[in-house]
Length: 67
Image (cartoon, rainbow, N blue to C red; front, side):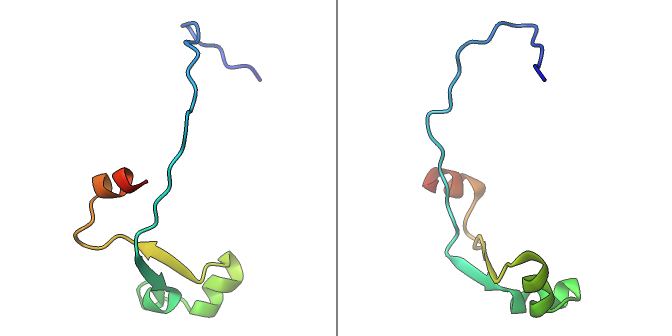
């Protein structure tokens, strides 16, 4: 399916991408009470064991700059 645009393309390109993971690692056991679930349930259905959360003093700008 071709998308019709009213303006001719200007030859834009993505030159690079960046990624950043906050240093605070949060295991499933830390969030199961808040979502009324269990570590086993989360791992079986999503495969997720841990996730990374930003710290209280870390802003979106900080994370974007690091990426």
